[in-house]
Each structure stands twice: as C-alpha cells, then as structure tokens.
Image (cartoon, rainbow, N blue to C red):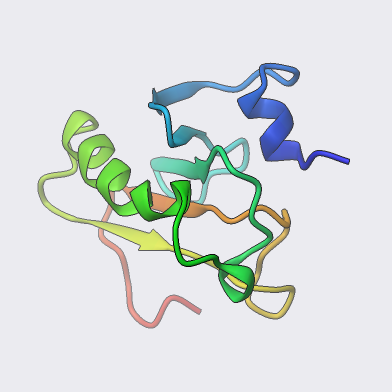
Length: 110
C-alpha cells in the first residue's frame, strides 16, 4: 500500500507543491511548526534513514533544500530535519526532510 506521501506525489491527495523535479517533490506541511515548513520527499518510497540504499532519489534532498530555501527567501538561515523511527518523531514511513524557516531556530530543539 502506498504511503501518504506517495499518494501526494501521484496526485491522489492534494498538497501545496512548492518544488518538484524528477527526483523529489516538496510541499507545505499541513501542521507547520514554523512560518515556513516544507516537506521534501524522494519520489522513490524508502521507509527511512535506517533503510537507505546506496543510490537513488534520496540523494537529491539536500540539493532540493538549497534551491527551495533560496526560492523562499531563507537567506538568514533555516533548519533541515530528518526524523528516523517512532522515537525520532517519524510519523510517515517514507523518508522525508523538514525544511523549517522564517523565524529564529532555537537549540536544543526539544
């Protein structure tokens, strides 16, 4: 069964897409924790960091994050987060990165 993110990528579920290319799709999070909160998802369904293959679409997440941050005017800084597993806060079993910005990011994050 495809994940929620695969269904968004395939256009079955609507989302506010902010970027896409042949490797990744990026869309606004429906429960943002920052003024700018974008999810960057590889088109290939990979469960998470723990099951990462050597090659694939996931390698383009960082490049996409840079492009999206520039397009959204995050020149003063942003945070990129990847959660792994339930204890790490991962709620959808499809590798993705959270691009957070638009405000000062505190540390530690919590």
